[in-house]
Image 1: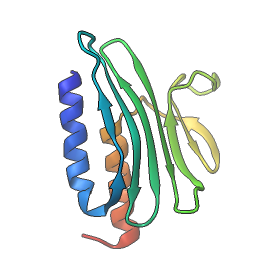
Image 2 (image 1 turned 30 degrees about the vertical axis):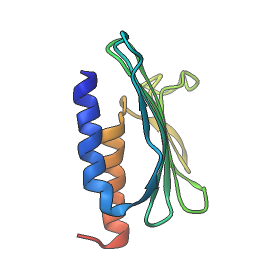
Image 3 (image 1 turned 90 degrees about the horizontal axis):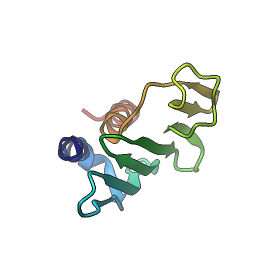
Length: 126
């Protein structure tokens, strides 16, 4: 499960590579524990940035993906913090400039694909 997830992250990053200006993604895998912790930041060619914090484990689903424009204004944040009990997908939710919305559990490969599609549209890149 963890190896598959990390392979999916690698594939999503490969697709985005031409659109990435800089990244500091780090992956920690404690010895003897079925867990991976992904942290870091990706800066894209348009100046937008994605801050990443994700725990990958068979028993834990915790993440925060904060995507902002080059002026550091929120585009979207997907997270699992249990502080929005009103959403149907609690604790999973998404923040947008319009507010908090329902969102199924997210993961880094999915978020990277969403950003890839957004960048392709906004940059007019094929």
